[in-house]
View 1 (cartoon, helix red, strand yellow):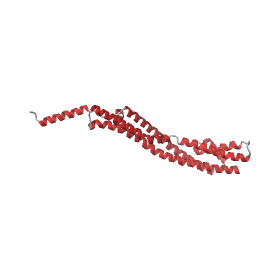
View 2 (cartoon, rainbow, N blue to C red):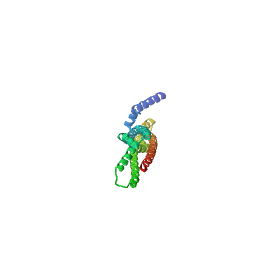
View 3 (cartoon, rainbow, N blue to C red):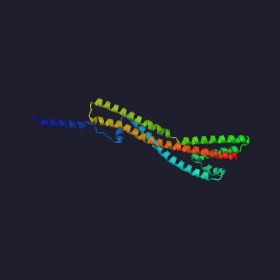
View 4 (spheres, rainbow, N blue to C red):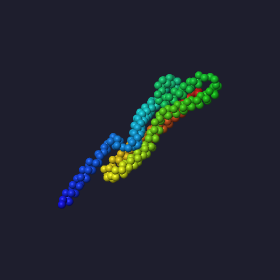
Length: 249
């Protein structure tokens, strides 16, 4: 009669060797989890990766844009308040108006010169209408420039709010797919469950990876845009006051 301890050892050896031979090795690297994920999870991951890439492109573009226009606006204001005559300053600036504040100034001055060359109205009526037109021209130029400055911020906001839910959808779908595979194989061991769960949670991680920088960047650039809009509004108001004095004179 064979020894019971020897039989038990042999059975354990057979079971371990069988499990080692039948249990596939899973690649838990980023590329490996992506390749082994369900096709719907792959689509979710590709959408999130594209959104993350586009968000970072917007972040870098807005960072350099705000840094440039703030520096140019500061130099423009210094030159503007130190200038002796508006017409001479206009001739100096009009060919290199490449930032919002200079564009607003040039638009207002062009409207002023066009109206000065017109003599179809009475002097008093022309002065009143001229001021209204200049204010409208500055407002239109300001809105157009702010629209360019704020372009892309909507995508950051959308990504920041929706990316976690898109990732969660990929996670839920991946877990459902993993449980379906477990039910078919009838293997509930941790070795069989872990790869599917890891692949599913990978979608949530990518969703957070896309959403967190987008939310932070949106809050920062929205605040920068609001401050710059107020700066342009203040300049428009001050310039309108200067022009009103010129018209009254």
